[in-house]
Amino acid sequence: MQKPIRIGQIVPSSNTTMETEIPAMLNAHAIAHATRFTYHSSRMRMKTVKKEELAAMDAESDRCALELSDARVDVLGYACLVAIMSMGRSYHRVSQERLHGRTVENGAPAPVVTSAGALVDALKVLKAKKIAVVAPYMKPLTKLVIDYIEHEGVKVSDSRALEIPDNIEVGRHDPAKLPGIVAEMDYSGVDAIVLSACVQMPSLPAIAEVEARTGKPVVTAAVATTYAMLKALDLSTRIPGAGALLSGAY
Picture 1 (cartoon, rainbow, N blue to C red):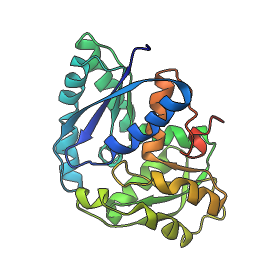
Picture 2: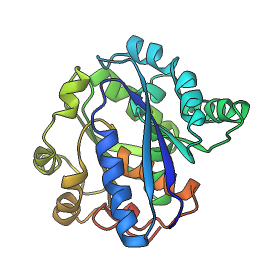
Picture 3: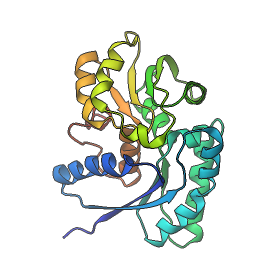
Picture 4: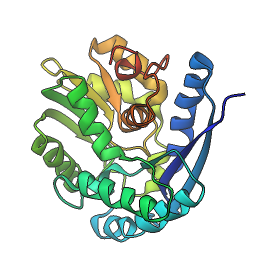
């Protein structure tokens, strides 16, 4: 029997979605490709999505990387997009290098992907120059996310900030509402739609419907993170039902 691949996730303490959506996609990968995955998490304290609390949370990520490397995971995913983006432009590169360094120091080197870096890279893979974005954050944090993405060379032509400050409530947002939210946006000239710029806001069940309605490639922070993990593991990036990025075309 094939040796299982260990997936490590650095997760905000109030996040309830990263450990459901990413395993759901990788379990579908296991069915399609006869792979095997196990899932392992370490948590950073965070309850309210505001800049000060996000910065305090990010300071705990080194401990989490050490804990997960103790388990000899094969890849680490940092599961909070806005925490990385709120630390300043290009910070995902700094974070990924530093956390990988912690695993090396611990004698268990493993690649590290962040949901922020994964989303930026996914948009480049899709060759998206203009996008529409749905985010659960308050407007100031949403503007910060837009600035971060645009600094990476992708224009955000329309966006919706759902203004949900409590991270638990973000995880309870009904994904069935997302197609209606997108329908009210101007996506006519965009190359792709970011259906959830947050790994805590559930979106996986709505991806296929939004792609069908809009005719645009749809990506989410969780989908992008899954894609980045698969690339780091040198595995096929084809997962049925998870949108264009994971269709196998890229």
